Image 1 (tube, rainbow, N blue to C red):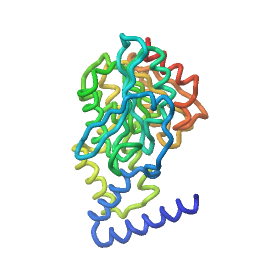
Image 2: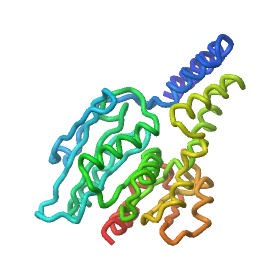
Image 3: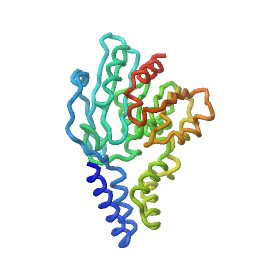
Image 4: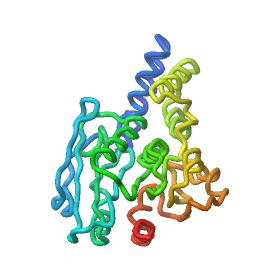
Length: 285
C-alpha cells in the first residue's frame, strides 16, 4: 500500500512539473482538481444499524445528488435538531455513535454526505460548496439547535455560521481544519509546484472561494461570533496541527470552551467515549 502511495505521489509530481513547463495555469487547474479530490474514493461501506433505522433524505445541489438521513427520537417532542457534518475523505456512517447518543437524549438528527463522499454524488469537494450545502440543509430541514462537525466539515460549519448569524446555535468543532492556508501548505509540500504554477494555484483557490486564502479560517470566524462553541483538538494531530489553535485558544474567549487531548490524533478523538460524553453534555446543557 505504501508503495502504491509513493508511486501515486511521484506520478502527480511529475505531472505538475510537466504541465507547469507548458502552462502554469493548466498545472494549477490540475493541482486544484487533486486538492479537492478525496484520496480514498467512495468504496462501498456497510451501513451501521442505526442508519438502517433512519429515513433517507436527498436533494439536488449544483446538479449533484446529495444523500443523507433523518432520525426522530422515540418521544413526540424533540429537544431540537442536531446536524452532523463529517470531514474530508470521510462519511456520515463514522458518526453512528453520536446518532445513537443524540436520539437517546431526545434530539432529532440530520446527517448528509458531502459531494464526492460516502453515498452522495460527485468526485470532488471544495469548502465553499460544503458551506453552501450546509446552509441549504438548514434552510430545508431546519432550524437546527446544534451542529456537530469534524475537520474540514468544521471549517465549512464555521463559515456557514458566520453567514447564518443565529447566535443561539451551538457549534461543536472537532479537530477543525483551522486554517485553509495550512492545508495549502501541506498539499504543496507533498506536491511541489514551480513558483508560477504555485501562484496560479493560489489564484485558482481564491477565485473559487471569492476571498483570499487566509479568510478561510476557523480562528477568524469563531472570534467574530457569539455562538456557544466547543472546540476539541489533540496536541498530536498531524492533519490539523494543534499550533493552529493558538490564535483562539490563548485568548480564552468566554463563548468558547476548549478541550485539549493528547494521543488521540485527528480521527480517534471523536471516537473516544469520554469525548463523546463531553460533546453530548455540551449539546444538552
